[in-house]
Image (cartoon, rainbow, N blue to C red; front, side):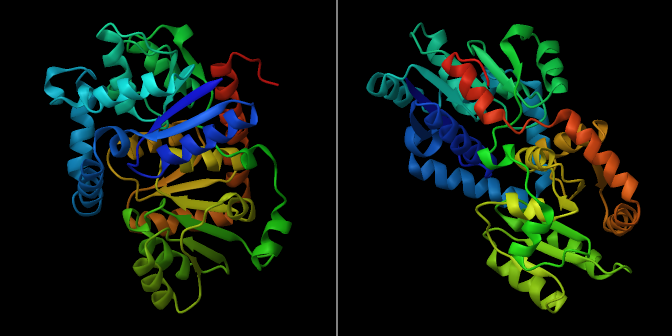
Length: 368
């Protein structure tokens, strides 16, 4: 069976989901092609410029993104006010479907999902199409008329999709696609030993996605240095080498700083608490690893909506301001029962087998 996965490089979560799904499909014996919609089907220059603009807005004026995200949620995905977005890449997507002749299409970003729907509305026959939603929210731009199946992160998200008019049998709760490594438990002491960390002191892991500068890791580092009780700090700055240097100089080596980490699973296994903004992939990984979460620095838009889900589900503490961060850290590290409650709630909603589940659905097989 041939499967086409459509993704986009806006943030690291969509591509991570695509690669996780590709691994699950290949493990099930399918042939997989992964295509970046904007780079491969629109134009590489458009991809570079639009990603650069997106990154600049998130760094310098995130409130603008939050406003745009809110406006987008008020519009249908095929609205005439969408300025042609539903047609981006449609012609090349049609040619790709002719050339690849996939048996199924899976989209992990809203734009290619809408492009597939546009082709269907034009009367073109398209393969069965599954959209995998990578955040813990239902947003209008993910909802398109001709999507056969939606795979969503949690029951609450399914309820939102149904409330917006999608038939319940078209919305399947699978979780967010993760690497196979999250299906297996890891021993904390062994993980710490491999990383050269103390088995006895609490460990706080802090990160902010592949681009650390999108978060507020300097604030987190400062708060860790000011804690009264001894603690180990591990900060992952992603591809932002400049930020890594600033944190190292500021902390004087009191906190270990890492750059981009390809496999975050061992770090999550070693930690007692994760401090991070609420990206969809990060939230899903923390839940799968049963790692208590303190959200801080979440950006307006989907991350604030993810954060709202996490707090309502009882799987995360939330700090919005720097002074709240220190108090939340002190509370989390001094109240073991609080972290136990977060872990217990995570066990109820975690779905570490999401990639395998989605692959089985698409391939028409029963999940084992």
